Amino acid sequence: MDLVISNLSKRYRGGLWGLRDFSLALAPGVVGLLGPNGAGKSTLMRILATISRPTGGTVRWNGTDIAREPDGLRAVLGYLPQDFGVYPNLTPLEFLEYLAAAKGLDGPTARRRIDELLQLVNLSEARHQRLGGFSGGMRQRVGIAQALLNEPRLLIVDEPTAGLDPEERVRFRNLLSDLSGERIVILSTHIVSDVEAVATDIAIMARGRLVRHAAPEELLRAASGQVWEWLIPSQEVPAARARFRVSATIRKNDGVLLRVLGASAPGPGAVPAEPSLEDAYLQAVSLPADAAP
Image (cartoon, rainbow, N blue to C red; front, side):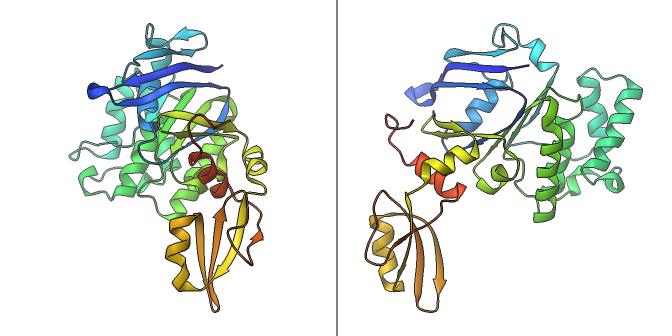
């Protein structure tokens, strides 16, 4: 089972490029797709979900071009888009029954699967309530359930923890880890902690291009020697932010401790620091497109 993306590009009207020469090969496991807003993540997800067609390049699922023959992938695809919507007058049970029928599940299989999923996403007791009265987090959990209805081999989730409280977010991370053994899971987000918790490898996007693809440990090694901690007076922070790449600030009783990205110390008293995945991510997206490894 493999998903191979080769030189994928997407150009919109007006000449705007959503993707440029994007290539990535994936095997079973969780890949965290990280990038700032506007990096092209959702464009890529829509192409992989066979909703949008690329301007150039190919996506092959087990050797088959999904643009030419999408049905083979669609039968084993689970997709939670960023802008997932529901029918407000339906209950979770009715909504999932409707989608199960659309996916071709027979009655007994659908009922068994829906029961399992409602329990999995902690909505069993709300199965007969109208979706129109659900909070954003509850609707997101319904979205997660519908993406898993057909026990997909390729699961694509775009900003899945939006609207979830901290407990629900941990629950969803654990679910993704459990699901990853025999399927490809693509977790698209701008929240580094979500990726750090579950991803076996990480793909970082910026400006429609792939700038890094590596295991978390490799990304941390690449950022080694590029992170500094620097304690300065609070009144000097605005100037430091304007001059340096600051990844974090911590207010202390004797000033503000900055985490600064750079090849050399930003100023007197700065000391080297162990990089975090957040540091490694910010370092990667700040590289010029032609300088990214």
